[in-house]
Length: 425
Image 1 (spheres, rainbow, N blue to C red):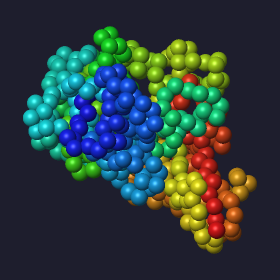
Image 2: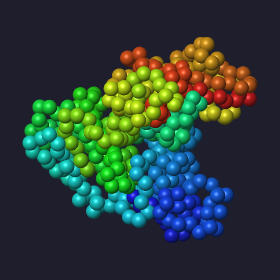
Image 3: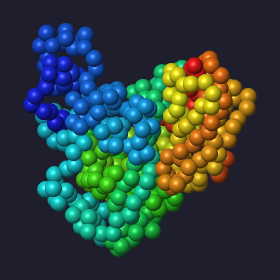
Image 4: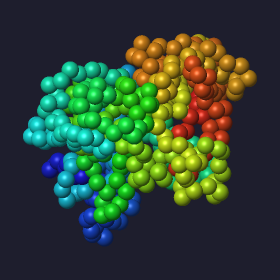
């Protein structure tokens, strides 16, 4: 991938951009720049991905990993591309290839893009994105979330691999595209009776020959696949290149890594893809594990499950940690979500550290796979306070009171009760 730079940058921006390149090992840095970088801040988000807000928190410039501060996230019912979190699996390539930008792919690229549908079928087919654009489009409103969202909270128990996400590795988005399952049926592929899985691959490739590719597999019986689309638009516009344009597989309720960017291949198979990014990464143990006693290498198909659908979760948007509000009636607000298979039925908040709980109002008007906005009002006197929030769905799934109980070496699926300390004056 390529980072798109503007010609006119100030000294600080240049140093930040040079730092991003130097960190990737692609550009040698003079000693004077290295010394300046040591004293300077992390790269600005816009120097890593053109068009991103510089208020974003950059975790890894080499992989374009950045999250959204909650004070920005809460201001928008649908998350703008400028502040949507990002995660790339392979290093940004400064020497050519894809452009890390919030701009869409060129018209020429979009026109020539094809998707091969193959696998255990009698008649493989190729689909042009330009033909997809002529088909009937549907809209899906859904949460997009990194499977590592909240990972840093696990570190109170034991360090895990990966970036230290807080709660900003998510967004609420509108997608438009062609329904996946009806499209596959219309192609008359002649699938083998043994077919039980669909695998998807994108244009991005490992930086090392023979490295694990990001190929994901989905059981065809998964209910979320019935809502899946080959998306061409995000928030009413062509999908930004860095977020998977010109075409991305969108499966509402599934973690971001399962929503393959730059889609090039769909394969009907009789088993999960053997890629390490399917079999060793993005998996959760069936039973509780302890730091140092269970590693990624211990993961098998028998003792873990892929991180497919979201664990049920809720987050406080107001007040945020460290904020000060006026004494009296205080509005508590936030969002909840799950995998969308059944509705979120209850959100409860506590201002006395779990001794008592208050039912919050839930606004689910954007559908079961979107943010479920919740709010309630409580009377609070001056002093230090803490709000806890816990969501439950129709299957009785709820957030653990102690999120550390689901600790795992990858730092996936954090969904403990959110606890936010604030001041009342």
